[in-house]
Length: 438
Image (spheres, rainbow, N blue to C red):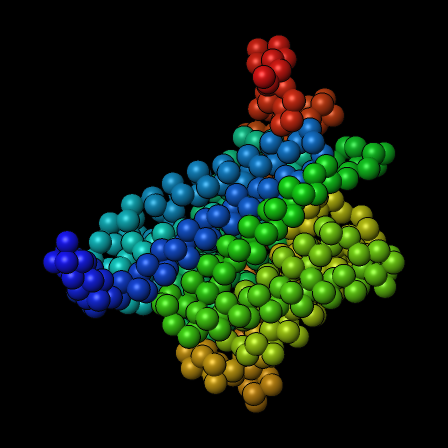
């Protein structure tokens, strides 16, 4: 027994110093940290499904959840087959990657930032998944499910992959450089702007003129917001690609911006409406998470306080005031939260970034480099242009072959029953008969 105990103790002592079997040079701690971060980012998509699902009417909750879950299915396959190589393959004219890693060939021996190639592939996959899922927040309760599936496959290929390459994969914005630590430009601006364009093309929900479009289950939404917040630590801290002090800084900045934005939203809501809503606090926190994402590994914790403060107020204005003023149906505020929050985050990175916390970044305006703000604006402009043009072309193309919207009758009855044959809370609809759950 004593010998077994000593052997186990000896193994535990040596374990941190062992390299991966057959793969010398990799730090097991870094590999483990990034894989766990990838799992956290994966959890964000089911969290987003709950966050969105609680905000729609009960007759559409399953369809709304399904739009996020099908993004996991479609984008996972797309990423393995062609998405990764288009994003991180060898640079072609600063715009797109080549086919070096088509079907993930040649990844086995690849090293990316001192990580095995497959570790980096799976981490980046989770970003691609949630980016597509975010867009659904602008088009829920009316978009055809078949059109949605085709849309996310094409959008990920034609919009997300080129933008990821330009910012992270060695393309033109990477060389500029436009700083984007964890996806403010690649993830949030692209999805938020595309969501707005899709909402405008599809048109408003039919019942929006006469019936209140109120959230049906706020506890579900709060649970989703909590899972998003939890997963966001993997999103931002994991983007350090190592278990180090930079990851800890990104973690701190992430939480700091979220709490500051939640507080800012609550204050803005109180001043505007004399009420502080639970949904508002949760949305404010998400706005802060979005805003700090591009800056998380480039700014100080005190800067993240200001980023969250301004982000919370700007997103409140976009969601609580401008949407009603311009009368567009961004159903669950994908544009208001991710588009507006992402743009502010990219700009804030150009203001607050400092090499003192990350020598691999750049100094921003506050540290004497006004040019970095121009670099950030270039990234914002290109992301907006690509998202707008790409989304318009894709939806118009799909519209030739498939209806983009469900029929009016289906929309009135609810998409859970008409599209999926299910009821979220009471009955299972099957072959025209209602079967109560026991």
